[in-house]
Length: 304
Image (tube, rainbow, N blue to C red; front, side, top):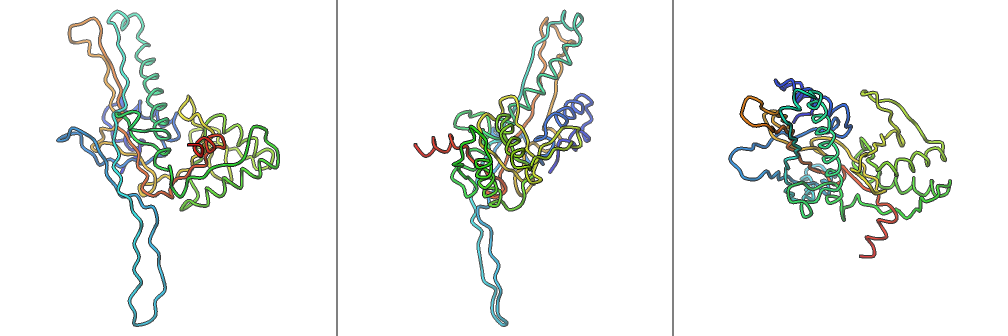
């Protein structure tokens, strides 16, 4: 297993080090996730990660003297998920290279932002039936699971009554998880509503994390705003990060992220640069993540 911080530290390429370091600074999700770096890109035409998802754990029981222990089996689902190649490329003219050298920094910055946005959006809403080149996300993994809940509370106007009702629903979802989650992932609009609920009930707390980012919390659980269109509904996702819970997937050998600048040593007026991130995600335990569907979304789902 590896984190992106370790990936940056282990890289011999200063450009890749800087690129990954900026990703870590700008993305809570990518800085928090552990990646199982187990796949190789050689010898196969596809990148598929197969694992067992624990839906219900084993049970223990007391036994009498001179008797055998009771046996139990976990409920396990075999899951295969795709590991995708998330990339962005750009073109530069050799005249521009000399006239506007700052374009290198601009293109790399925008590639980094694009990769962060797309990864975060896919972790939530990824569906290989809609995009065969991507990977499946939490929305699909949690559909119909024991940790998917539907809200019945209208938060159009937040009153003490609606705030208390929503908190009860949210606490019910959180109580279904194996432990307190590491984060609640919400849209910008939903973060505004949760902050308002916190103020109405006197529960609002804020602090700063190691990166200097201001953090809101609900009962000690970080409220992470998924910006730039990566999460657009009012559904609230709770996640527990860990190699046996919810984690990322990537290539082994420190090849997860690569950055290539245009090669001006070869003929041609226009050259291409690119950045790539080989990535996916896996939910090893159903109860390592949960979702509280917003009232409108829940009503729409029920009508189908």
